Image (cartoon, rainbow, N blue to C red):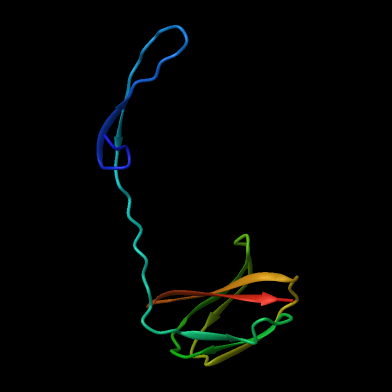
Length: 115
């Protein structure tokens, strides 16, 4: 039986001493559902930049902006309320960063580069 399918399967291991054993394991299939927002809720520019960037909210909702580095460490967090534009001047090392906008309709993430 294909171990990648749902159900039960049995493996029969053996060793150099002619001992044959068995192990029974159950498998389940796990699906990941990706939620996609209908429209972009913010834009980031310029990209690439030197740590000075502007975030324009195209569909403003109360939410949280988080900037993380490539390892997932949160560098900056800001609770936005009825803002249409946010200007940031961050002293960041060269590299790739992510801006996450978390709000009631979902989460949107965009990458930007500091050079």
